[in-house]
Image (cartoon, protein in one colour):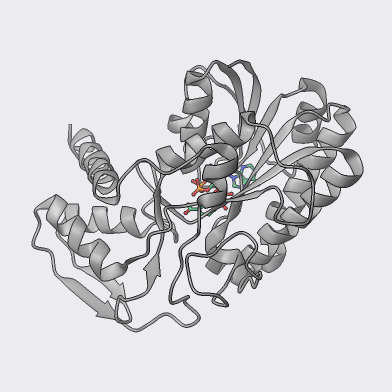
Length: 322
Ligand SMILES: NC(=O)c1ccc[n+]([C@@H]2O[C@H](COP(=O)([O-])OP(=O)(O)OC[C@H]3O[C@@H](n4cnc5c(N)ncnc54)[C@H](O)[C@@H]3O)[C@@H](O)[C@H]2O)c1
């Protein structure tokens, strides 16, 4: 494979893995990231890096002038609680920034640019149907973050139908793995790994029976590569070019804590805290469509993925000490 790829958010958790995989598959990779939550050290050395915001006029110019074959768009305001506190900021980045890029692709005249958008399976479906949720399930985002991600999917439908752009949405479940920011909101695995290394109690909200679908970041990177390179289904309604990316397996927080404790060999206690208001009870996505159409399926088992992740955080601690 070869071609020119742009990865937005390539200094972040998932984006840096996507960049590594594209480079390993022969792509020339350019990254834009404003480092608001990303880390310059995670940018692969062989990628071209521009520190800039996706909302910036310079990002638009870069896209118009570079004739990228692929754009993997991961840069985003990713914090659901921040989206609740400041929906306008969330929409400026997550809707406005994405429109800046889509418009730039349209203006570049290169309609064949494959635009792969990182959407969310955790925040667009809501609690309406029992998991695992298929792409066609009713949408019911409960937060400005989920609403913005879904809005972008509708905009992409417009750009595909009216301007012939090659857009595709990947709806991730809960992604975990090396490089996840333990200080963020999303990363319970990263938070637990660091607590285990510190020897401080793991906090479990409510009864800990709330379930999530944990997918390994390497599998998510591979979904991006396939979505960037495989033929897409015909343009249709909202879900025609949307793919869930997860494992279809529900794991509750108590079980997650148990497996991680076992991996760490640590006897750290779990502390229960009051349930968080509005927290979804169950979540997992049906991934049969990605398998059928893109030839993608998750390869990493939860135990192996958690082991890799724990080892990564342990190694970082050891490095920091030397
Ligand atoms: N982590 C998950 O479980 C999960 C689940 C569903 C969807 N997603 C989506 O995947 C994508 C990547 O998330 P992540 O977990 O790697 O988060 P992350 O915070 O590690 O990565 C996001 C990157 O975008 C950059 N960024 C933020 N705002 C920007 C802006 N205005 N201009 C340029 N760069 C900007 C950040 O600096 C960061 O490097 C996001 O679009 C997120 O919504 C993540």
